[in-house]
Amino acid sequence: MRETESWARLVGAFVEIRQNHRSVRSGIVEHAMPDSSLLWLAADAINQRAMFAAADNYEVWVHPRPLAAPVRFG
Image 1 (cartoon, rainbow, N blue to C red):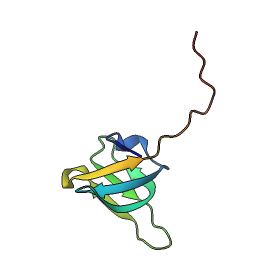
Image 2: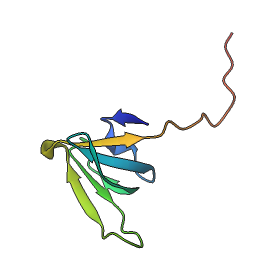
Image 3: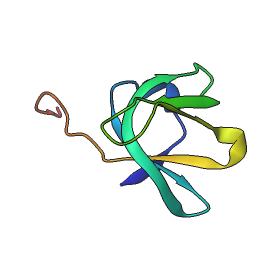
Image 4: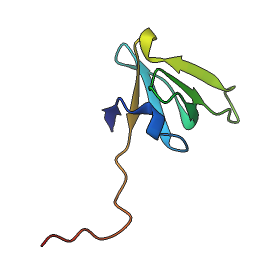
């Protein structure tokens, strides 16, 4: 996993939320502010919808996704 600061690009992605180097929650990003200041995780079978703010020292970690098409150089 790797940390990302581009929260606005994560809508629909599965992420892990961390604070102070500890995992807080994981789930699907339902919405994010264009400036990446806030992010909402969708409700699931266990948790309600939740909001996380960058100002509260939350970090968003993602698994890198493979490219959709083969990469060719040259």
